Amino acid sequence: MVNGDLEMVLSLYDAEAVFANQGGEVTRGPYALKAELAPIAEKKTRFDFNAKRVVETVDIALMHTQWSLSGTTPITVYAIEVARCQSDGTWHKNSNE
Image (cartoon, rainbow, N blue to C red; front, side, top):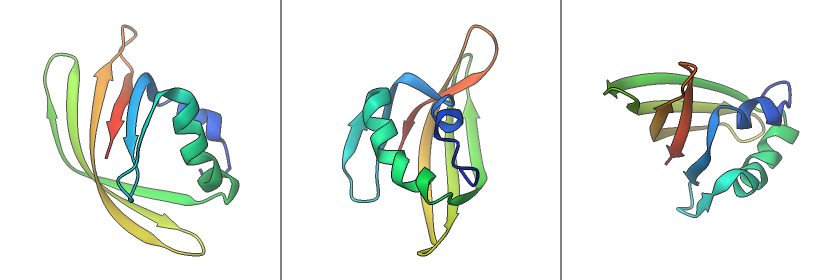
């Protein structure tokens, strides 16, 4: 999001995505996710991530990822993410917690 391109980031998520923020609040769907991520995009926050483990089956992947966000208040978080393989072979995230 260092370029502030929120639409590009949202394109990685499935239309049925569920997102849990650090406070434990859960958002569902593209509009709620956009509202959650917009402030981060506006600040042009840099995201670095390291996939610690990926467990994959036919069309579902479970990922344990460490995210580092730089900015005025840098943070490091661990996420459990679920992705679904699309018909074109790309992966979209279904959840992020």
